[in-house]
Every structure is written in C-alpha cells, then in structure tokens.
Image (cartoon, rainbow, N blue to C red; front, side, top):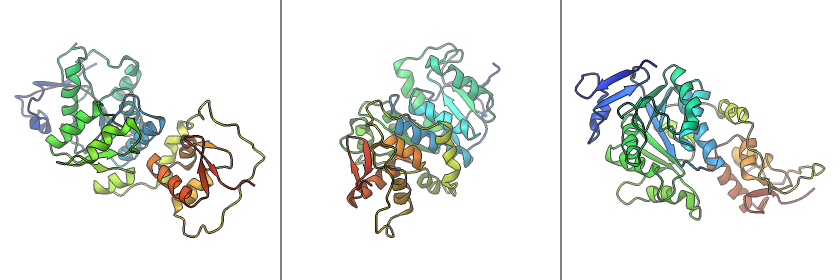
Length: 319
C-alpha cells in the first residue's frame, strides 16, 4: 500500500495535531489527508446492541451530511461507527493504535481494507512502522483522533472505559463533548454519567443525531433516509429467553391518542400484546434508542404499555 507521511517539521503537517502536548513526530496515512469537517465517535468495546445501533445510525447521518467520522478502529462502538459511515457512502478515518503493517484488532482487517479503498476514507498511523499495539498507545491514539475532530461523541462508557480518556482529551483540547446518557442503575454507562456531571466541564447529553447535527449547524436528514441502516442490518434477533408469541392476538388502539407525540404513536404501533424486547421495538420503529426508551417510559406512565420481564414491553389491554 502506498502511503503519505507528514513530518512534524514539515509545513503540511496537520495543523490541529500541533495542539497536542506530544504530537506524533511522523504521521503516516493511507492517502493524503484533506481538509474536512470531522466528528469523533468512540465508546465501549463491549457495547450493547442498542449502543451499537445508535453509533451506526449516528455515523450514517453524519457521513450523509458530509462529515468525516473519526474513530479508533476498535471492537464495539468504533467498528459500528466506521461501518455506518461506509454504509452511507461517506468517509471515515481510522486512527490506529499501531504502526503501518500491523492490524489491531486482527478481526477488523477486512473493515480496514474497505476503508483504504473508500474515497475520502483514511487509515492513520501515529506510530512508527511495525509498532505493535501497547497499553500506552491507546491514550496517545485518542489524543490524535480528538485533535483531528471538531467534536467528540462518547457512546456507552463504563468507569474505566478507554473512551473516557478521549473525553479527557476533548476537554483539554477544547472540543465540544457529547455523551449518550444511560439510566443511573446501568453500570455500563457509569463513566458516561460521570462525564455528563463533571463539575469543571460537563459533557452535553446526546439523545439523537438530529440534535448533534443542529448543534453543528447542519439541517438533519429526514429520519426515513436513515431507516436503511436498520433494514440492511435486518434488525436484532430476539433474545433466546424471549417469551413466546401468540399471532392470533390483534392490536386494539387505546383512546385519547390526540395528545401523543408522533414518536409515541410510532413506538406504540411497533408493540404488540405479546412481550417484545426493546431492541426489536427499536428496530421496528427505526428511531434512535434513547428516543424509543423515552417514548416507552411515557407510554408506561400513560398506562398503555407495561414492562415484563425485564427489557420486554407489551400493550396493556389484550384483545
């Protein structure tokens, strides 16, 4: 693979990387870097299916709006973000924790090859050739991907998640920081909640791609244009412990729907009288997970939807 090298002493060295306290002496890329608006998306390597779907849809919308999606190529949220950008026919930059000629994680070799072939997409190596990944490389890698971006999004971070290091870099480099919140009892979001409540510089809670795009000064695409992401993925399979379905039951519309929001109506129409897992409801509604959860909470308060067992929802009144 032919590559491009940027020496720190050269005038074409990326200007934003000079903001780092210890910028890479040499940056190697799979092709020349071009000026672009870029947003970093990072998160847990062991993210939930809902978090992965949110990352993929967020990246899809950002790429569709012309932004480069930057991430670290790791398992979980990083990989989902890169895939979402590619699905949209957009550009994504992978900032690797290794030198050129090394692949980490090895199972993403196919994804990285696709990135290298994609117009506008880049593989970026901030370490010398043939350097293997090491623990301290990830923090340095995070600084590079944050420096290349104008905003940073963290999706699902536990207390010791490496993505919280990216959040720290965002604060140090004065990049807007957005964090997808989780319920306070969800340990996998404990780090996310701490970043949102940081006393010195709290992160902005992120609920949807539309919210982020508006903050970046871009008109969001109609949500119908994003539905292809979920459809291409064929949605999640119901968990093995999902209760059995009864196809003979029919839906009956509850009264007093005039005050409902369009999202509440959409989520309600996606639910049957048999328990459905929240991931399947999200897939059917083709809405971001936080908005589905908000609608489910409201519908539960309206006493038209009940939860049970944990993570499953159904309409209250059977036909």
